[in-house]
Image (cartoon, rainbow, N blue to C red):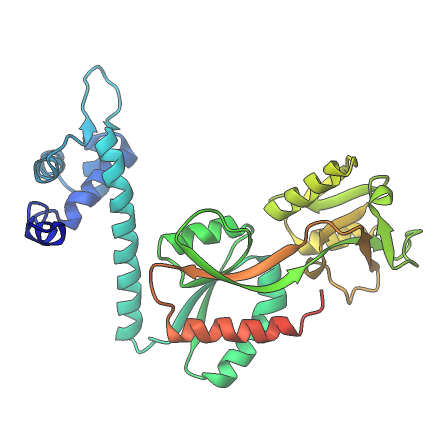
Length: 313
């Protein structure tokens, strides 16, 4: 029998229900049947019955129920199934959100995730362009300090589209590059460097620096400085653009940050080009590669591309 026919004919797993998978996840999260029952509002025996039924259906032991007061733990088969259960749960969550939006006449909602710079420098003009083209669309924005947090939400199906920084970690992601954002040195208007257009790597290694705490691309850029034999002297870290801008304006230190993260309109500071350049930050729009991008989300990506063409980093 051909493999495809055999796969269709195998109905042994058709009895697996979402409640079985929810019970498995709850037992793992609580590390006990009693805790899972409390979390789900079931009796302990009901949770035990659901796990036992799930194990019969899949034909393998999923939980190690060893005695001696130890917490319940997953077997190798249980770990494998739980990963699939998480993905199924995410898809159900996505389906509910989309059905709820449809029910209240908001099928044009795009769930977008953005880190600070993308939210401040790219998204506003993108929304202006998008809404001019598609007035019925609305955007539900979720913000995060790190794009890794947004990528996790995207993978779980909680977002349709995010702004992220390349390279992306391994995952079910597709992306399009939007803008290259070179690293710059931001100095106080009172700095001896303020009247110049650029600063060398050697000079950068001789001044105290302020930089981002959680930006993974900043860490890559700092490693590039070290590869050039320069050990940066970092005296202050923050994840807020305004805090870094304020520290520079107060002449606390020179900021080492992507150009778009700086407020170029602030008369208290000056941006300097770094020579030679270090690897820039590349901002992209990313979405799930295993599902089609909705028309409204695709329109937002197109608008973001148009906006980023006009950005001067």
